[in-house]
Image (cartoon, rainbow, N blue to C red; front, side, top):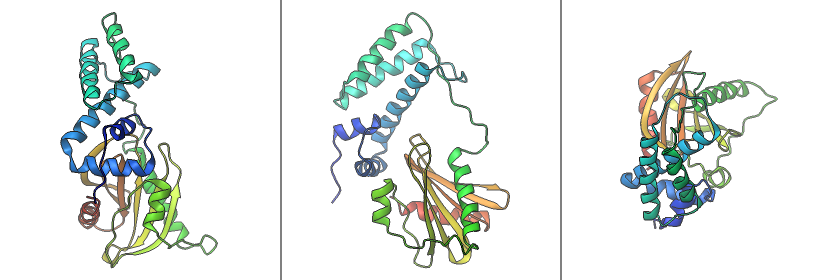
Amino acid sequence: MTEHVTDEDLTLYIDGQIDPLRRVVVEQHLARNPELAAQVIDELRVNHELYLSSVGAPEAIRVSSQDLARRLQNSIGRRVFFNRLRPVAAACGLLMVGASIGALTTSALSRPSPMPDYLEAALRAHEVSQVRAVMTSQPEVPEYDPAELLAATAIVMPTLPESWTVEDVQVYPSRFGPSVEMSLSASDLGRVSIFAARPGDFAAHNPTAISEGNAVLAHWQIGEIAYALVGASDETEILNAAHMLADTLY
């Protein structure tokens, strides 16, 4: 039975205060309701703009005072819909008054690397797993309990094909919570890794593939969790496998 998602769940999710297990329920609900997911994304975007404005982040994108005021006003309207006019709404009102006095600036945080941080982490984790595979002093940990991993990290991992074998499972620290790396023997694909982490934003996009050195990374995102399948096989084969894995998450 699908668990009911309340307005309070959405409130806590947007404010980043929701219980990890409840977060999974909300993200599954949003994945099935694209219109509601779009509203939640707008809420998160406004929150991020307010935060960047308050901390004086490096300027990359200038938002006019009228534009930001309009977004804040729309946000307040949505917050009424979510039944959550809390202190943040009062802060929005104060910022709207301030917008009439002077321009507020927000910016996108620049990345020094052409790849997102989580893909860099996925590639490094894959390289580490390759080293661990040949070191007798660093035994692999093939025991894989999806329920235990979910309880510990609040990350749902894809369902694996029966022909794939788990060789190692590792949990790594990351900026927005724990990340998970699974090393697998994937029949025709050879040795591959599945990496899952929170990149710090909310999005939904289908798998796409990039090459980095001898590795191919097929990556996708569902809600707050981004995934990457890393291997050395043909890019098309890796991408097709990523689509297959992504489909098991819906």
